[in-house]
Amino acid sequence: MKKYILLVAFLIATVTAQAQTIDSVTIVKKGSWGVNFANVGLSNWAGGGENSLAIGTVFNTSLTRVKGKGTWKNQVDFALGGAKVGEQDFRKTDDNMIMLSQYSKEIKSNLAWSLTGILRTQLLEGNTFANDPINIGEEIATKISSFMAPGYLSLNLGIDHKIGKNLSISFAPAAGKFTFVSDDELSAVGAYGVDPGEKIRAEFGTNLLATLSVPLMENISFTTTANFFTPYAETFGTIDVNWETLLVMKVNKWFNATFGTQLIYDADILFAQEGGNPTRELQFKHVLNFGANFALFTAN
Image (cartoon, rainbow, N blue to C red; front, side, top):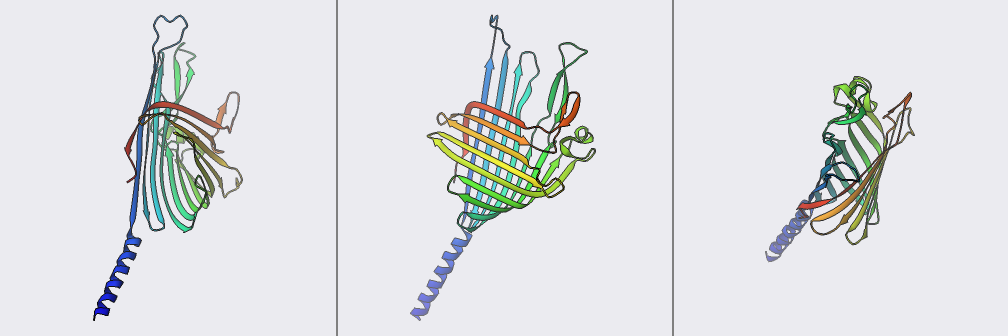
């Protein structure tokens, strides 16, 4: 009888341990919010110049759930900034919103299959400005973007391979790229590659994503992400590129400086040329910020 009791106790302990291992869930939360501000004020300044005011904010948060060999990561990155120079109206200088959701399951060490969804858009209307030929000294604003115009949704199913601690390469032979133009005016002219009057363009192809993240020295880190997509269509081999870099220099607990760049080449986006046909061009942006940064929460 005692043997049976010990055997049952052993089986219960074994099953309980296995259940704990199987059902064990780890949740990691990270988040930060930063603000930056710059101002120039001039009065009777012989050297010339104009008053200016610039302000911006950056918000990043992520929630990662790990259960067994499965990992589900959700992330939101948001940046918004604007400036007022002289008598001009306040205009936006940075506007970017990225939402990511990824589920991956380990196949073996440093190798996993994954399903990833990434949505990119902006929040506010974007304009270009040209001198008004009739009202001298005034400008004409032309709308070129707004919320979800454009919006880009990427759905990728493939394999993730980690090389060392810093480099990750994801190859998705089954990838979808969806371009949204929700604004009626922009849709009507076929902006961002949609057919005139349509509000969505769908492409199916293959996607390659490489991410490198390295600490350069104490309190200085560098991250770069390069994404390449080509459609399975008559344009196969035409590659859309989105390459981003971010250099973070932490001054102390509260203050840091960041320098980020973004390079985009999208064969579906054409730029008007004076006296000529629209052409495809490289898009490039850089943003330098210095300001206060606050941790919303840390890893649990």
